[in-house]
Image (cartoon, rainbow, N blue to C red; front, side):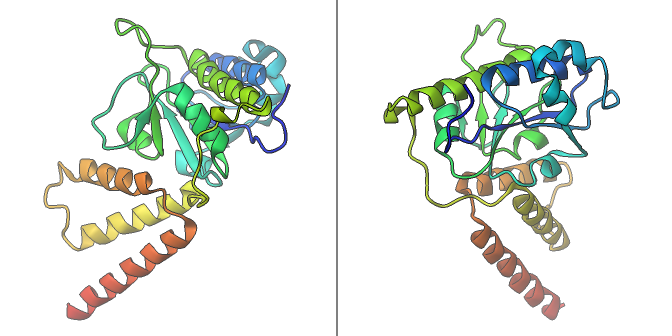
Length: 251
């Protein structure tokens, strides 16, 4: 059973995947759960890669239709909400939740949603995680919480599918109410953050070069928690423009 009308399946973004076989296995997991849109960010090996095909099994069409991008912002250009998967907690002031709660949020969300996964050996780095709206960590065995890539994809994809099936059967409690305001696409947010960081740098805001990356991540996390709309992003651009024009006039 694919998603009924009104329940848009999430996109899967695999960042810096190390082995093509794991891309294939992830595509199979997607096919199991009715997901089809696979986006790859800078995979280590060349792409397309025939090593992915046998592991994809019935999901070979997902492999054939997978799209390639240079970075996460480009891969999520039309996405409004990103759920990042991680096996560990982060020292980043961003919202964290579990796979089942995240599935309800995805189901209730208005707009495109992406599930974001990092490379097999290390997972997403902090600069990648902070591009997401929420960080998802499963309560697995604390002595061995690590999943392989396809297992992680299957876990989040299945929780979404289970929530969708409950909702389609009339169990509306499966859905967490969502705001009527649709957050701006990731590409719009990323452009704002880059502009803000450049202007803050020009204004001497970052006093310590060593701490600048951490402060930038915290600023992004702060805005992402607010889930700004496209209109709000436009307003913030106007604020930056007004402030920088005044500074330039004084100089």
